[in-house]
Image (cartoon, rainbow, N blue to C red; front, side, top):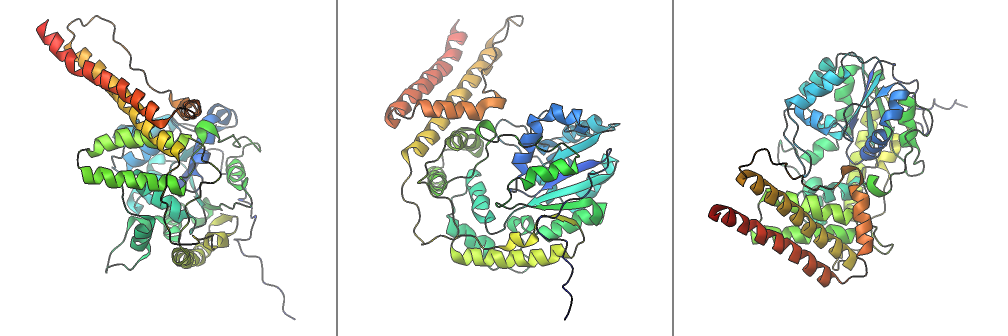
Length: 435
């Protein structure tokens, strides 16, 4: 009778071990759509408490996206957030220079950087760096990854997108999706720079939802429950439903065919208004989630199995069970697409775009007024902006308040306000010139 083999490092429920050293940097490098926003929002909400427990979460924003893009020489931006520049990385280094407490940095773009950029990060942080990566079931990632392309303006259907990212490649062709799902490659990159013992992989599991926050509490030596904030309301970062995703896709199709909207206008009105308002609402129970067809689930499971094998050989610390990454998930029961959009979803999208247009028109009106004025000592009007800390909750409240008002009436009323603003905007320079 042979003895049982030893339990592998990826056994379910494995603990991360001791916290990182008290003067080290814990770099949360990814992965995208794997609990990153939840941890970042929790750290933001508990920034003061973290300092009391010896952890510095630098900056004032909810993550370190600008520093992450700046160090890589990238210039990404999104509505309401300026693109990163060299000063953002330099400012981050200045803030943590001489810091004796643990430093916690987090953004999923860190995972995407080439090895030379990662080496620069480790070198310029100039202290012991530990890297943590959160990972989720790979087949379940398909719907999340596709909806991100819709938010960026893609008009490809789910099936079309799946055929592209899971289909055959031309010789030497590598898609961004390939790089972002090469889990073992990303972990190996960081392990080569800081050492396998300083890399932790946290495998998310729906059966143990508390694993995410508790693992970070252990790594940062925090009391249990400190990062367990309520992520409802303004902190929510939910996925689109199937009908919402199709609504976005159809709007993208229309925008592309019209040819009258510049990309910057699309980002300002659509991503900065319509999508925010859409995600602020609470979907009905009858609204189905996005599910991939069976062939795509099978293909992604096979990819994930290869990743699991490679990850297990790297010698890094693993919290959870790597096999969760390659488990099958429910697939779409038929090939029929979504053909209808719930009225509340359409209402939210339309009002979000109209409200954003009104806000931008007011800003433009103020800018023109400031340019035309000759009285420099006159007090400047301040533009009314949505408070960052409560914008999502305000959107939820206003959405509920308009639930019983017909969409046509709301749209006409808001459009009238926008039109009035625009008329004043056009006439104001004429009046000034004639005065």
